Length: 357
Image (cartoon, rainbow, N blue to C red; front, side):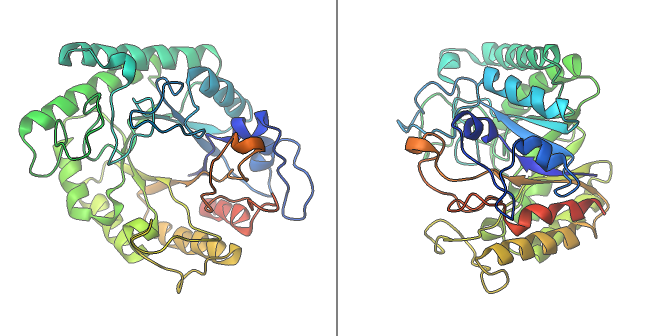
């Protein structure tokens, strides 16, 4: 059983000298050591990797959260492994965010043919993993793609209305075959360089059991070990919906363990329905530090009913303000486990270890 967070921004916060305080206001000298301490009790961490985040995003935006190139990731992951955490590496296969609405080919791969793209994803995956292994930061779990329910590496040009290379339940077999071909090449590299690592296929369809089942059925010939899910109640609906999805996975794919590789909940300033979220659960879990902690407790209680679930990761727990001159963030997300205003740890930080009990 594993519990931790996607702490991909921790190195940036530390590089920018942002202070982290415990719940009592005492300065934390080493956040990783503190997360490993008995008080917090985490034993795993997740880190994302972009191909070339120094490139301007395809839509012209510049986001300081998109900073995880290979050098950055090696530096952070080396520390994570040195502290004794299990490591989940999250390949985005893009210069920027990869998610259900964005799976854009890296700029340096833009002119490649389909066959060359398969070779490139294999070579790139292999080279990155070799660098991590050489640094003493071998991943224990590897995600070949982030939230890839609709495929990956769609095109080099942002066109959100295009269906080019996207994989839906009614998409052509050609789109699915292309996606699976790319995925197989990435996984081949993972198995060669990190033969002991478990392969995690990541979907955000935790609120749509039928779509998730179709996705997993289509990947029945793919060599992977674990189904990874994003679950945010404000996008994916309540815990009852998640429970139905987890029951479906246990029945339909009994050989696959399940990991919640992303979750979070607001502790202040939640957007409105239609203005950034799809569901408002503030009457169930108040938008407050106590409400955030209550969400974590209720999620853990639900997950412990499902023996197929063996890991839980909070997304961006290290959120802790914008940093000097907005060097780390340009706007608060308000779902981390430190208070953006006071820099003190929130109650939810100390709840997650209960998943291991």
